[in-house]
Image (cartoon, rainbow, N blue to C red; front, side, top):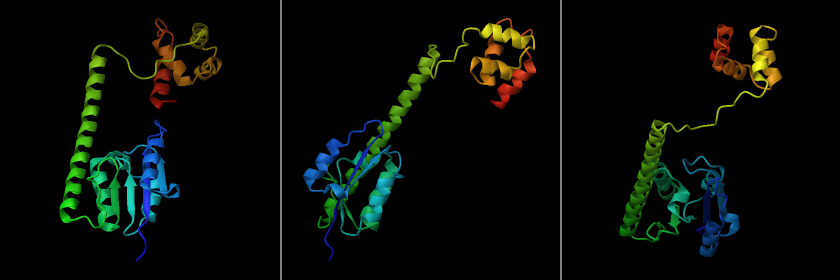
Length: 218
């Protein structure tokens, strides 16, 4: 019988960039550095290059070690699907270091396996519910802020010095909107948007041209 192989998996978001704590935990457990797979991206799904490589390497009887369940993933349904795939289809085991009850190594009795499944589903459900609540609180906070007049997003680009003179030349048809935009160093749509918003300028602006550019999104 082939010897069981110990693998480790680490995930950090691209914002954190700090996998040292997980590396130390896996190393202390006995996982060799060459057998640790690391992804630096969101845990919203399992389309991660190193995780996919790891799944291709694992065989029946192998053991996958992770520091905590959220390092495996963040989506409730996806976590359960991957958990079942590893333990049922691949016939491999999973050990979650921060939660000793989440240990499916062969040799555990039926009660232990049942407890691990229940704990996994409970933890995953709580995590998913909390993320839903966070998104809801964020949406409510944004809506309340907008109601108070708070603006979000990138500040609008303001016309540079000399814009009025270029606008006047454009209004007198000395230059086209494209030529005006080149002079100002912006796109034609930006120039026309500024022109449209200029007070008192609408009397001599080509409204049709402005609408055409804005609608085309050029």
